[in-house]
Length: 107
Image (cartoon, rainbow, N blue to C red; front, side, top):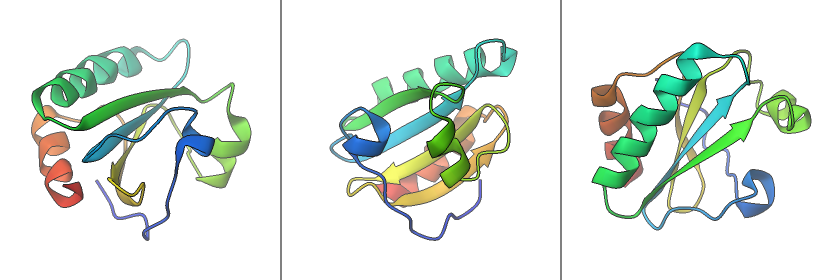
């Protein structure tokens, strides 16, 4: 996972409220096999860590946001802190341990 320069996202961009402590944002596409596994991993981590929300965004439906954030492939995961600042970004299917470690930077 890499740093994303501190850009902020909110409910207007995500279409969903932020988690109290952090938000895991997943960009997916309909026929992406790794997206399904990523969805499960992020949902499990969000359920384990109090105050963490998981938001999944269909990249095909939100092309303007995808272009704005320079999302090049699915799945791409953004980790946001409580204020919506992007603290980490990863492309591809993340490992649970990497997601938990990235959350450590956000909370």
